[in-house]
Length: 402
Length: 228
Image 1: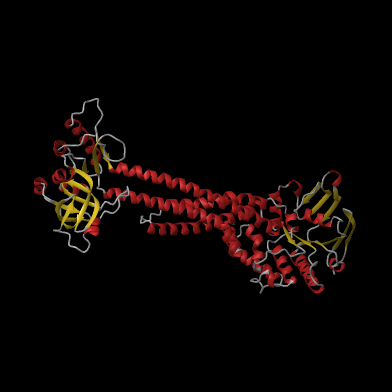
Image 2: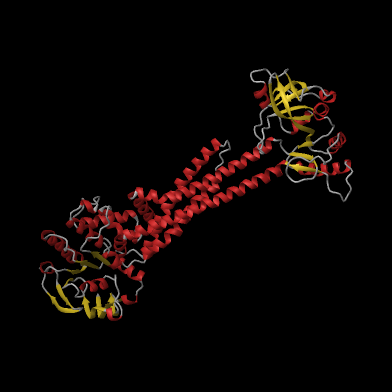
């Protein structure tokens, strides 16, 4: 009986193709909007997490000052010293690299071209801690760091803006009027999750930076890369303990530095996009509701139109429940068809968006199934009233209906 | 088989109340062929609706093979129609854009019969009404006489005890009308199906073994007669 109802439903959809399509439009648009928004949202989430993991895997960032998320510590925050770094290197286990860095925006000049870039002072550990790769040359050496040599490693953006079509290795560029020799070119990381160009960077030995660029001996932050994701938390705790000791912080005093876990930051950012996606999805779900009302409207029309047919069916022995089932199945089939079309359209839109927004295409089978199921439920809910009207028809009246 | 006792049927309320049947007593024996005649408003359609379990009496009893119909629910009456009754209407009332075979199968679909068995019985019914080669045609592709034959096939496919025909020849020309009447008569004699038919035409009523005239909500004349 259910199968018969299903066949009948398909037949009546086919009979009024144009009307069926127009009726379905509400459901199609609603489902498509939900699918597209959620898919784009989870793509954006994936993009954020992968961007943040590009900053360095299992990474902790130690900064002076104990502020919440935001720019690095203000001028009053006490920066780190060589001493702090030595203590950390001696005391924190299960880490791949501990990299003290200091950085500043400065002008970089080559020939007659100049550009502003982030100038970072660090040592070889910096490249390990932040997962940088080299496409040409390599890192400066430990002796370069000790001797404060005038060498540097440049990011991909610097190559394209200052040294296009020029072999960069061995060239001398001027950073804040200080000449330095390019020894390596970094592999591109692209935009950071915070929107800045990570490749617009010049890295030089920490001491060179301190003496020639910054003019002080401050270490403005320390990047720490743990061996495993599980080791991040332990490392965080032991860094805090060691720094409290080396910086002579009293037992009841607050830390004057912060140790931040990049995965935590990633989680925070993802939860924001997830919330946005949820809100937009809810708005889109309202259009599904409107689509459902469209279905109800057309089913009511259909029941009126087919009053005589219903009368015939009742006269030859259809039970009220069988007539109810038939119209209910029809509404559900209609909505499921709309759901299928909507899923196709939504995934298509999300696919297009992923190309234009350069985010990964991340369809979630759960969401697709949910949207499909939900459109069926809409058919049930909004089809029930018209179907009940059909089932309650008086056969004599219905047969007399023209 | 059928026994109506003191059946009344009124429509409307209060002053606007209309009495269509005023205390009707009627017995119909199994295997008979009954023609019901009468002017419009005489109560014959109301009687047919009550006999067909499409309507219920306002008072009185309707005993069908020992079943008290007045006590049945809507679904109970639907089941009774499905199992014991077949309907033929003046306007054929076939489903449009549906083949003859599918139209005939319909009562069996509601009985939940398996497809292959359904098809076999429907083909047999179409054969019985002389339409064995028309099963794939839709009503629009069939003449009026053929459509009424499909309707009769649909009515007999479920092997009913009673065939209720409401002016079955009302929309047909004389020649087709006589064809249909001969078919009904054949079903009556060969299969023993009780036929109850409403008609305006005396020469159609002549096919019946009993002719009942209705007037003002009761039986004015009731004649048993020899077969034509």
